[in-house]
Amino acid sequence: MRPEPPAIDPESALGVLSLGSFPVIVSVADAMLKAASVHLVGFEKLGGGLCTAMVRGHITDVRMAIEAGQAIAQSLGYTLPAPNQTTAGDGAGYGMTCTVIPRPYQNLNAVLPIGQRLSQLLDGSRNRLANTAIGLLETRGFPALVGAADAMLKGAEVHLAAYETIGSGLCTAIVRGTVANVVAAIEIGMLEAERIGEFHELAIVSRPLDDLEEILPIAEHWVERPAPLRLPLQLPAAETVGIPYEPQVLPEILRETVERNPEPKP
Image (cartoon, rainbow, N blue to C red; front, top):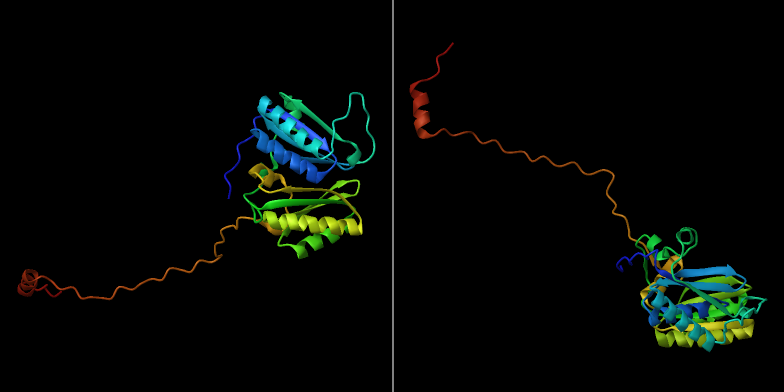
């Protein structure tokens, strides 16, 4: 079991980055965690194909993390909107938006999901698929997702860890295994998704950090919870051990005294 993560300082800076793909936002979060000393608070799925990654830390680290996340997203075709530009359509058409708040107001911490990591709410459970590579394959439409997931499981030595939906018909299958098996599975799943329906995005995280492990969805099947200590309802009664009777033997000097002076008869 991992040690409990440190609590997030409510005075720390907040970085928020949003775009229209769950696999891409996971890649962005992985890049932000590895680029600076920040903590991943969680993902917020807004519907319409939009999802957001939120990080906390020192203002300098948060700015560095957001810049690293922007670079990854831009390399995958997501761009920041021009000034006064309006966007419309599904999540894939929104591009990318982000902001950095040096010191969020106290009311913001109390209401929005930015002040406490989800991992701090867990009950000591453990993910059996932890410390393995992560593959994410996103399709538009559930039939393509089911077909791709089945093909991945049959074509490579991977496990289906969970699936995620973000609206606009976008759904993501999350598989775990060795890096080679995850890469092979994603290639197989992408071809099957294109055959059935529409493939949208993919991502592979070869070495996820603990923050990402704790935030990613995981099916209940793969969660190990600490078993409570069970005591029997009725404890067996303690056995009484009898002490064998042994006649007392008087010392020689006392025996002679008793024989000389017997007790008077009534």
